[in-house]
Amino acid sequence: MTASSDETTETAWLNDDEQCAWWALLEVGSGLFDALSCDLRATADLTLEDYEVLHLLSEQDARSLRIGTLAEMMLASRTRLSQRIDRMATRGLVKREPCPEDGRAINVVLTDAGYDLLVEIAPIHLESVRRLTFDHLTSADVKALGSGLSKVAQHLHEVRASPSRPSAEAD
Image (cartoon, rainbow, N blue to C red; front, side, top):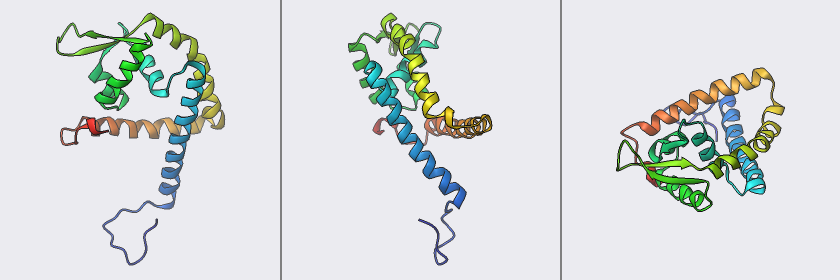
């Protein structure tokens, strides 16, 4: 949809470059998510979100994060993340433990089995990321993509943290 001459100027319509970028972002986001999830499911019966949980926990000193912090890092609702953690815990990849600093909070901890699986599948996953993404971009493209998307990601984290935003639990 584009602006017509008789429409009000209140709507800030996307120009041609913005429309091209927006629709490409939606297509790539959906297609890349599906392709990477399909590869992970075939390799290790994981989704891309499962892999993200394993990866984020593996980067922590104690391989542990509060579930709320993990949800914020993933831009995920706590309810959905809690359900994912339950499924991953059933497989022995993560476990829940009381937070030592706050007995009301729960930490998600990467188990040895979860870490071992991550170490095993990371090279396969990274090959998929490279094949589906970076093999098709120049160094300049990668820098521009990283710069632009980092700004959007930062804004999304700020919006999510805003007290005026409706609860993410409906996500």
